[in-house]
Length: 322
Ligand SMILES: [Cu+2]
Image (cartoon, rainbow, N blue to C red; front, side):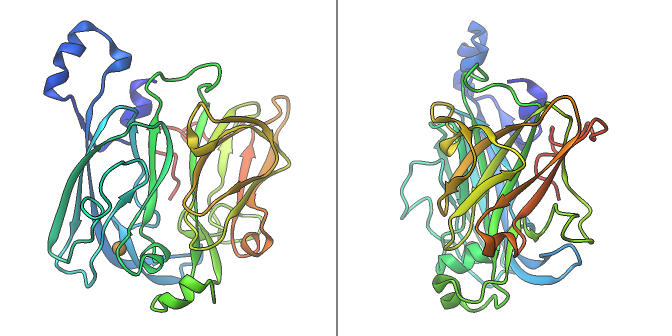
């Protein structure tokens, strides 16, 4: 696990004072840190497609999805949620990587308040975080979700090889009537599938306004961290013109499956998917939710495997493309 790789997504990381002894012993792989994460609930307008259609969202830090939070297994997450007094609603956070008290740490706070708690990330993998304030369906549908990646404490292995590139893809449902919480619960009137906050976000094939696509070089191992942040729909996650070389249920390196065509990702599940393209020529994949009502509403992502792929994409800060 190299420094640049981890540094990119940690907001601030400080060594716990009690761990100085461990540091001096030189057991670097066992070094647990305290990672400080602050998110601000922002009720703001966002663009939910490539042509700029506006939507009155509720967000973490102003974007759908919220920022990528990344720690290592064993780290303590020292978390702060700010709900500014300019907001109209209570908000909360629910980290699926945490084992705490739903009535305490995950409880909503009113505008003008701040919530502070800590938890230890015991399990490696990919986990959803989201707002749980009532009505929860509405807070998630309006955009309050994201991913926390917990890298395994033992790093890479034969079972969990180092990828050449990494991308985060988070699917959500778009309900044009942002005030109708009942419709969200009953799955009525949903008009779009958002990938990282936009319909057809990375699909220049189906959307002439799309300017982004995922990129890799032929033969590279591309690791996708996928979250199903839909309100009611499972996701049939499939790479058209490819096969998931392996995937890890909930992103845990112990839960490995090989040669998977389509994996059914439950609502609020997050998994890790690896794809390796043919190494001798350029190819393209369309990573889709094969559930047709979702694919045709925007859940299609193009992955271009070309020798002139941008060397910066899928690395460092560029794993969730905005
Ligand atoms: Cu909320």
